Image (cartoon, rainbow, N blue to C red; front, side, top):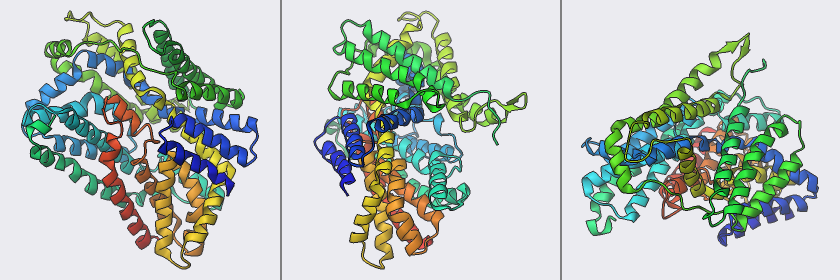
Length: 559
């Protein structure tokens, strides 16, 4: 039972608003120490956890092109364009985007959208432009509200669409964990089919909230509206490219003598870049993971004790961007649209290509490869388009580096949090947190009450995800505690709907926690929101209602 102290540390740290990186690290180390896991094993866990979860940071590869075209007035042009489309409203734009995001996620095209790829450069400016066209100048509070809902449209759409695709990470996690641990043989298609009811419910619940933005905005007075064959290409090239990007950012910061946290910030981003390189050898078993674990802990110390900060972020003025938007017009949309188009083409065509009888792309790497190549192509296109004479100097490679540094420093240490949470889940599982939770669940559950057992499993998935920031980490714990021994073995439930809906219940928790940095804190930082919890506030009603739907569906169909 003492292993639950780590869970308590996370809760207390969150309540006291201590830096989440420090909280997660201390909770993981404390839990492992209580479970008598040795120091080298703990460092190995941090190293392998970081190396194995590098994919969650791949969104940064699009920051150079996004920063560059923003510098030249992309957002201003998006607002000008939408002002000409009188039938488009803020709610319709966001609801339409959510539908597109959910449908594309359901067929495995996750990386064609996201906070960096589409929300910041396109969706939010269009949504704000529609509001300004109808209601006039907006207050900072109303702008923040639109930003929060723009982020929520992306997150809710992808979360409750992706599990309908059989080859997504959550489906593969369920099958691998359950099949290995309990000797079942679940088919991914069976799990994916049970994700459809929740996906439909999420759409029917969240889309009306987005459409209601138009009515709520109208009601505000203006004064308030302010067999595997060896593949030719794996995803490691992308991790090395991202590592080089982080190192370049570190050098850029180190050369900025006016940066308030120059040495600490340069060290943080430089170590992060080197860790991406070294992670390749950890994943292949050619290098010890404990060394990477030490580097990760050094980064946590730098971020946790305030040694990582933001520079002045010099860029064009609003007046210059407006002038540049008028000069370049709709050409500014071309690089932004290149990212999803090229990513989709590679994701669809890449797996079909072979060289010498060997597949070109490693299994499961097509989406990441598409994202990386599309970012490079989009940057080249942007550099070419912006070469004509303009009020600002034609861009050099230093310009996208400076602009991406500005965006990346706005995200800050939150870029590392998802990988730390992956490590925390691993340490919790090794320490036996799931067994301890199962013991408590046995005390709490009324004997013979199926509805109570279903509710405890679904709500427990959401609660542990809120604490750990990761439904993937919560799933083994709650499944070992309640899902398998109580719902499947005691009540004879069908494993496929129980585990599929259980994972989706965890996603409801992701919508409601700042610990899920990639989906909640990072969008708020990218959109430069005053209220960093704006995306969470926009998602809370949907999270609660979808969780209730999940409990009802599981109770009806799984037994």
